[in-house]
Length: 349
Image (cartoon, rainbow, N blue to C red; front, side, top):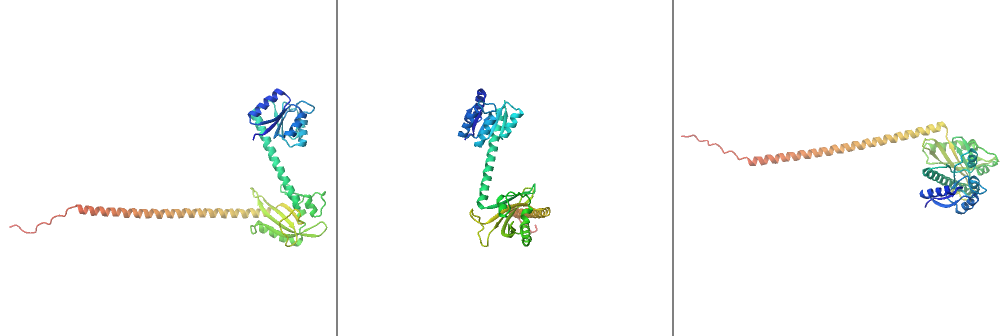
């Protein structure tokens, strides 16, 4: 199905030319108008995949004002197509967050490239927004408190629900990783560190540990910490942990109406831990490499041995065959040669 394009052009001759070029490129023209007010109505009714918008158009609204009006109601990507490149118009156009800016005159290749990039970018952004909305809905439905650690800036985002679970006022923004780890009960911090270290060494498939967390009112809440270590392509080590607080023997699965208390975090280990894990990984990879090389050499040696054995058997069979042929030939020769007559032994008289 071709992409649906709406064309808003102030000059009729130029508009006809651009329309023909779009149709040649395989796009469907859902509407063409030269009026800003009419363009708003048509866009809201037809909801095209993309709008090519001239800045100087007919009516009280220019192209930039028309795009802004449409943007208030519909998420439709706009590419400005105009001969005007003055800074005031460019500054106004940037405020509407267009997906492109084509300066007349332009080639078909430039037009097609601008449209395809705009469509791809818009669809990608829409999928990302939908994914973020689904994630936000899941978080709210599960009653989870989220904290997200930015490893580059070493800042943590704590969700309002997380702060509420800890008894903290929402208006007080916090960004320190210590806000979480300093709340672990002193009697539990060593056990938590041991559990994390065991998981990072590969002793346990995942992190699972119960700890007490300090509430703002001074009381402690038992929480179950679950996590999994993740390495990126550069062996930068991070840990994603989901922590749930619940009474003993409660189900681990979170339901929307469940009273369970949950939080999650992303944290980066210190340099010594990263070096240790990286060294362990290097050693494991080296052992795996050596095992593969040894296995390959063993297979080659086995193949060579089998080949030599087969060649020896073939050589032996060949020699036996030659010996038999030679023996048969000697027998035939012996049979073909006549026996010599014995000489008389008597004397002459």
